[in-house]
Structure formats: C-alpha cells, structure tokens
Length: 319
Image 1 (cartoon, rainbow, N blue to C red):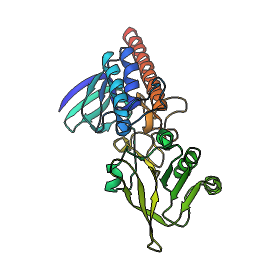
Image 2 (image 1 turned 45 degrees about the vertical axis):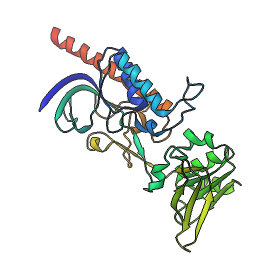
Image 3 (image 1 turned 135 degrees about the horizontal axis):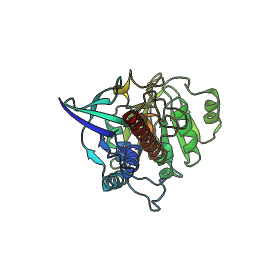
Image 4 (image 1 turned 90 degrees about the vertical axis):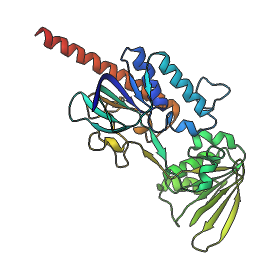
C-alpha cells in the first residue's frame, strides 16, 4: 500500500475543517484535507444562510462552502476528494487509510467529520429538503416568521426547537409519536404552557406535501387511525443527530452517542496529536460559526503540538 508522510491531516470539510485548513496553511503546516462523502458538510443542503457574520445580504450554504474552500486553497491547502475508511492511533505517527487503498502517516490529525441529522425516511421529506424541510430551527426559523410550522420529535431538542419557533411563528404543531415526551420536565412544561404550540400526541407524519415548497403536512394518529392535514409552510425534524465518528471508535474517547470528547477549552482528544472540532465534538450549539471557531482552535493546537515536537527533536539531536 502506498504510504504518504505529512505533518497535518484534516479529515472532513465544512466550516470547521476549512477554517482549520486556513489557519494551518497560514502557519506553514502544509495541511492535506480529505473532504469526505459530503464535501462542505451539512451546509451544502442549506439554501439560505442569514446568521453567519460578514454576509449582510445572506448567502446560500453551497456558495459559502465554495468560498471557504477557495480561501483554504489560496493559502496552500491540498484539498482532495476521498474518504478516510480506517485509522490507527495506537502508535506515532498516526496511520490513516483513504478509500481503502492509500495509507497516510500524519504527525497531527484534525477530525472535522461533522454530524448528520436523523430523518424520518420519507420520500417527500427528502424531496423538499431545503424547501421548507429543515433540521435546524435556529438556522432556518427566521424564514418562517408569522407562519405555521410543524416540529417532529419528543426530546429536549424538539422541545427547544418548538420553543424557539414559537417566538417567531404564528402556530407550531409538535408531533409526538407516543402519549408522553422524552424531554426533561422543565422543557415539557415550557412547550405545554406556550399558547401557540399545539402538541399532537400519538401522531406520526404520513407525508410532507407541496410542489415546490412545503404547503401542508399529512399526519396520522396511530391509536385512532384518524388522518389530519396541517396547513404549514415549515417542517422541522428534531429527532436527533448522529456524529460521523464511527471510524474513530476504540481510539478516541466519546460520549454515549458518539460525540468526541475534548479537553475543556481546547480541541485536544485523549490521543496526543489528534484534535477534534466542529459538530463531531459539539452536541450543544451545532452552528457554522461555532464550528469555524473550533476549527481555528484545532489548527492552533496542532501548530503548538508540532512546534513542541520540533523542540523535543532538537534537544535529542544535541544531547
């Protein structure tokens, strides 16, 4: 197997990965980035981005990621198509296999593989994704001001999304599959007391309807069998996210859902020379701007690690 030796490898793109690449390139680390299965990450399926600083007129997600990539390349990042299929962090340098056929030995690895929203699996949901269907109320709620929307989910995330949307929207329907919620008591009380949130218990989505955008949602009460059409222009799926971190299991410390655990206030993982940033380690904020910030942190941490390695090598050479 072909082996390539590099100082800095970035796994995954998106705001975190590209920001890490920009900082690492400017620091002279000559980073190599493998973009993964979805170059640009979740923002590539987001139509409008209005909450990222520096874009007063807004920008589409794909355009923003093209800008990030172009900036990373301008400073010398080697951006490559390909997917990391396995890693071995038991020794040093760190070993990474790309597409099952190319091996890389890297002194530092920045993990920015992100997370993927969980979906219901409906054809109509995917067809209208970005056209009224969303997995982030904070990102897209503004576009539905004074409109009626639907939120699917029963956990804290769904309750938070519904509460946030209730401040902007005329009406929020919350679809809960069972006769109780999984959310914490305080979050349940919040959604139950907001006057413009209507909770539909024992209810599941049959179809998201609309030609070019969401116009209504067909739902069914699975206890009574009764179907009902909800007039709504927004459909928010809030049933959780799954971090794209499976290949790092057994090497990096993670929480019970697979988010990589980092030392508080840093991007450091339990493996020296391996750093994590973006949604792969953030299960709280999950915003482009916070992902970019942790990408900056990861690059600076990697730079310091490599500088310390160089000093250590010089000491050994002169000993």
